[in-house]
Image (cartoon, rainbow, N blue to C red; front, side):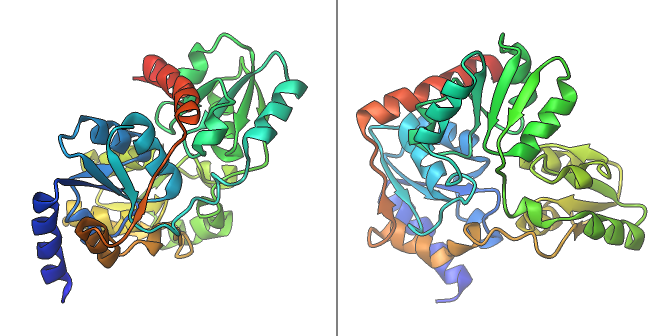
Length: 305
């Protein structure tokens, strides 16, 4: 089968088998085209909980499929490619958090959404990149232990000088591949281009940015801006997606190295097999883990919308 034939087969099968397909923004365009919803990890989980279908396929990485199962415990949730994980989500575990709580008893422990369900059980709050500053501002504790992304944490720290941040040495390997030399070179080549970056990038990159925000924020800025050229400082699939969204504008990757190999693992054939019922991994979560991990997420929704 070619791409179009495979996509047509997926569209037929998902209707026949009552399946909802979720695609994270970093998935390839051919997967976007067959998805029911495209977006960030938490937004997709919310959409899944509202979807009428009883089978959900996550085209993304493992912690995202966990989040879907947390919010939709009665639905069948599959991770399209069982090998797709998130290196940042694996940087810390629940035992690490319990140790940090002993070291900083007066601090609120805040976890980025890009963490495992088991780790979330031990934290006070969860945040997304788009809601982090809003939520952190409302936390009564002066001292904040922010895990695991020290780059997102330091960006929040810059905007909340009245808080005392304890940052743990972690972060997204994909976003940290961008270095100052890269942004200088691309800016020199395209001096009129706006620089749009994700807060997971290094501080040395952020100082060149015209806009800092989540992946969905970056796409919205590019669509609404009057500029015609953009340098994109996040996973490079977004360059291609923006080219489809805004054919009258030009987009450049800040670095050719900014590729998430885990996101790239999932193929259109993985989606086909999962929809067909012969592929993917069914996600299971212990009821206690699910219930305890939901608490910081519920606080996130209450405080961040």
